[in-house]
Length: 179
Image 1 (cartoon, rainbow, N blue to C red):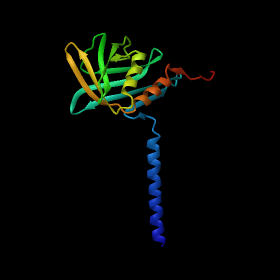
Image 2 (image 1 turned 120 degrees about the vertical axis):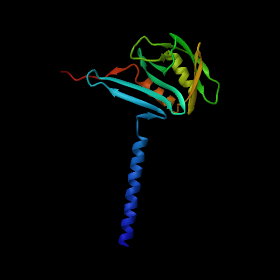
Image 3 (image 1 turned 90 degrees about the vertical axis):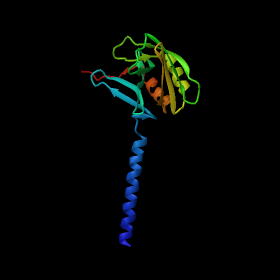
Image 4 (image 1 turned 180 degrees about the horizontal axis):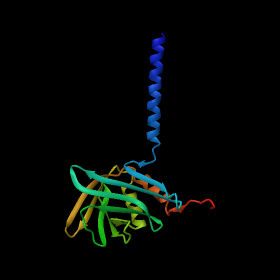
């Protein structure tokens, strides 16, 4: 009886440990679906920056594409950085859920050296996220004079990531204590 009770208690403790671990994973705020979320506060300035990014790197696909959602000039914006492609100052990129027709959007190169790739305007960015909706997978096609290139990217959680970035844009300064 004592041995049986010990085994039951050990099983219960193991189950509780697994439940706690699962709860910690569920509360992990570093991801919104497939998007990694960075939420940092600068200790010197008090600036809180929230941005989301998704990297497409697949051994079966030579394309290396980074999607980013971040605050730019006080408004949330959607960025595409496609390694190995040279884009003009303005470029057309088609984006859409894999099971639907892609829509075309105009992107432009940023003048900021800290903002690599192409940036969509805040209005276009919101339209892109709305078009992706709750899709788990999206297709992105670059339209260049040298030819079009396409890539499929896992984008689950796009609306949640956009919401988090938008909620913290423009970047706010936290109140600083007097010196």
